[in-house]
Amino acid sequence: MSQPSSVRVLIVDDHAMFRAGVRAELGTSVDVVAEAADVDTAVAAVAEHRPGVVLLDVHLPGGGGAEVMRRLGSTMAPLMSSPQAPRFLALSVSDAAEDVIGTIRAGARGYVTKTITGPELIDAIRRVAEGDAVFSPRLAGFVLDAFAGTIEISAVDEDLDRLTEREREVMRLIARGYAYKEVARELFISIKTVETHMSSVLRKLQLSSRHELTRWASDRRLL
Image (cartoon, rainbow, N blue to C red; front, top):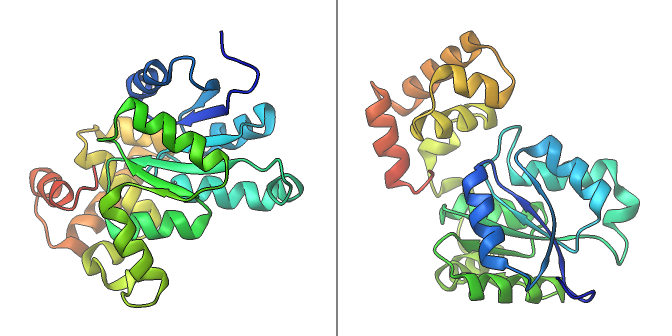
């Protein structure tokens, strides 16, 4: 049984097996109070469970981890500005500068990649709960560079910058191998809308097939 002093954690990720794996790695070292799979359920879970730390995937159905933080800031302003406000730790496969900086700017206190070990993740959660900023080692340098103004995040990947937020969501799911019907269900849009977004993505990126898109996304560590 978790001790009363354990950090209360909400796990937000759209892959159930990954959430289960993280929960198993955390064990009783923290108190996992709930899980969520998309933006809407994450916002609702924060309101209901009031976690100390939200372990947040960057790419989620409904707008991504940054959208979770933005929505909480607008709908739960009193909580988010109080000493009891949850702190956000991003846990993602992506180490792309745009993802890292965008997530930090949206309000995350840290960003670690999914290569992290269980004990390292537990330590990161505890440190974030105490107010520290935590980053995977190779990410810290360009985070500091970005906030010092020495790099322009919008120029990090000009191809990705051409896509709208919705097109990025569709692109990532398609590149992960989702069928159009599955993408439509995940994003609560029609199959026709998925097809339209996919055509736009391929045109903007000058790609000709799903196979090329998957390779493009993999090269940029967006999956």
